[in-house]
Image (cartoon, rainbow, N blue to C red; front, top):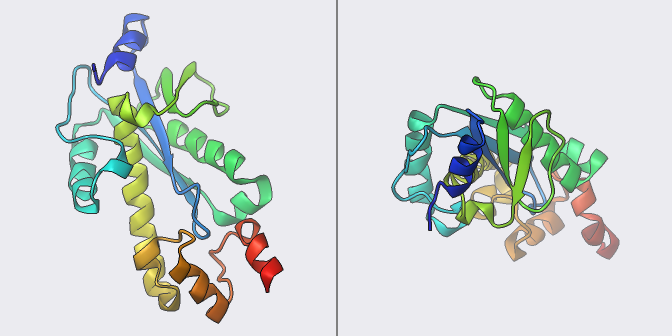
Length: 201
């Protein structure tokens, strides 16, 4: 499989700066949703890059620095847990993606978006289902988003040690629900994600 097939197709159509876009953290009960946009140089293949979910934490951390170094431009953005509660997780994800694309130092003129629906962008774009395993720039974006969110949740683990965020990164594990039962929700919890838990109490 050509890792850069989608990027090359866009470049062949005359676009100059093609960015891959992906998100991390749609599912957790706490913390923001993250998104990243990455523009790679033409024919840039970074060894070891894959869908972030298929890589170990250590490998993602190593690749994070390599991607930042090799990218023509990259941007990492968020939508907060409060925004998630206000506009829902899908719209908050699109908002984070839009912020990531708009935050690029070099303006992209085409976007490759992981998934099956497009966020509202002011540049042409296409969706690629399972894009993080088909497009290198999307895979790079998935790594930047995932590592950035994990780092944020490790900081939150220091701020709210009793939730043990370092172990579950905010996902709804058995341990996380046990900590919620014991301590209640924190200000970084997504209230809209806790309705079932509240109803049980």
